[in-house]
Image 1 (cartoon, one colour):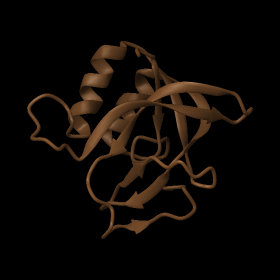
Image 2 (cartoon, helix red, strand yellow; image 1 turned 45 degrees about the horizontal axis):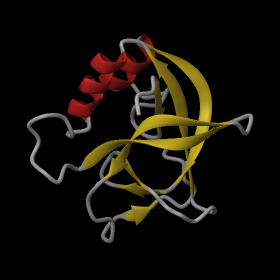
Image 3 (cartoon, helix red, strand yellow; image 1 turned 30 degrees about the vertical axis):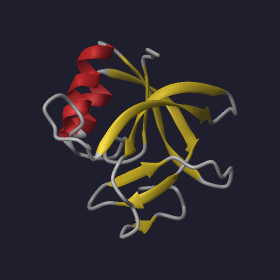
Length: 130
């Protein structure tokens, strides 16, 4: 499925001075706060999202509409170390998932799912990285 929407929940969100967060804000339209079903873990200085079937597990983030979708996704794939040339299994994988906007509406968006074991990681119970 090809969508031009990207859900971010960590260092790509507004308020971060990271160059990739600036790249996103300069090349995408901020659509608002959003959430998805999942669990958030503290990986290092950044979080990892793991999908969950439990309706109580919510991760909060932001939704963007990308301009130049393929070029930006290629850049973010490299940033998340899941682009071409990275050894398998990669730390993150890009997938589409259903996200809920602030008004309660649902849409599908790309996001990066954490792909390594989480047993030794601390869970961010609030579902909010910032």
